[in-house]
Picture 1 (cartoon, rainbow, N blue to C red):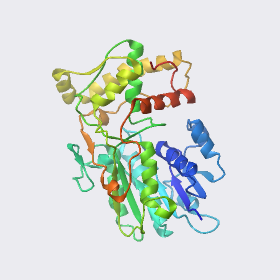
Picture 2: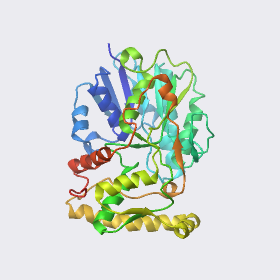
Picture 3: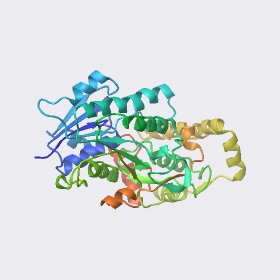
Picture 4: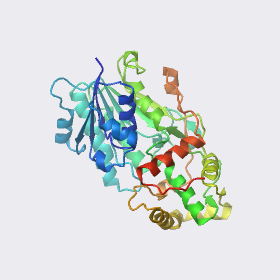
Length: 375
C-alpha cells in the first residue's frame, strides 16, 4: 500500500511541482495539500490543475501558523500520515522581521511539533542555502552559518528549534535558487527584465560582474529530492532505513550558474544585448544600495506594466521587482553533492535555453505574461 502524505504549502511554487511529481508517478495513495491560498486563485498551469483535480489529492485551506488549525490538518479519519513535507513559508523578500517570525519560524515549529506528537516517519523541512555565509567557494552542509537574507535568518532559527523537539524524525533540505515552471522569485525577475529591455530596445546592464555566482537547482529535481530523502527505496525514494537523527542536504545543480551565464540565455531568448555596469557605478551602488535599488525598480516596473497592458494582461503576479537583499553583491555558491553520495541523480544538471523558454511559455499559456516577447 502506497503511503499517505501531507504537503504543507502545497499550492506554492515548490509545493505544486512536488504534488504533481507524486501524482504523476503514482507514489502515494492519498495526498492532503494544506495552504492558505486556494488553487483556483494560484495561477496554476493546466498540468497542475489536472493534478489538483485528481481523486487522490485532498485540498484543505488552512492557517498553518495556528496550532488548532494545524492539529485539524494533521487529523485523518483513521491512522496517521506517513510523511509530512513543509514547503510553507513567507517567500517574499523585504518583509518585516515580525512577518518572518510568524510565517517562517513559528509556522515551521508549530507543524514540526505536531509531526513529532504523531510520530510521523519523516518530516521534511524546506529551508534555504542562504543560511550559509556568502562565499565564492561552494558551501557544503558543514560550512559556516551566516544568513544574508531575513528569510534565511528565520529559516535557520527554525532549524535550530527543530533540534529541540523530542521525537521528531526530520530531514532539512537547503536549495540554492530554485527555477523552473511556476518560478516567480528565482530567475524569472531577470527574464522579465529581458522582456522589458527588448521592448525598450535598450541594452540590459546589471550590477557587479558576470562572474558573480548565483547557483541554481531546477524545481523538478527539488521535487524528486523531497521524496528521495523521505521515502524508502521500495516506495521509489532513496531511504534504506528510518531517520534516526537530523539529516541535512543541500540541493544545487552542476551548472555553476553565474550572472554571465544567465545573461547569455536572456540575450538569446529576447534578442537583446546584455552587459554589466562599470567600476564607478558598482562602487556607487555599494555605498548607496537603497537609492540604487529604488532606481533599478523604477526603471523596470512601469515598462513591465505597460508591456502587460499592451499584451492584454490586466492581472499578473509576475514582477521584475528586486529587493535590496537580493541586489546586494552576495556570491551564492552551493555544493549540492552530498545527496548524490546517497544515490540521488540530478535529472536537470544544467540550465538550458529551452528550459528557460518553457518557463516563459507556461506563463503565456496561463495568461500572466504578454505574448510574443521571445524571439
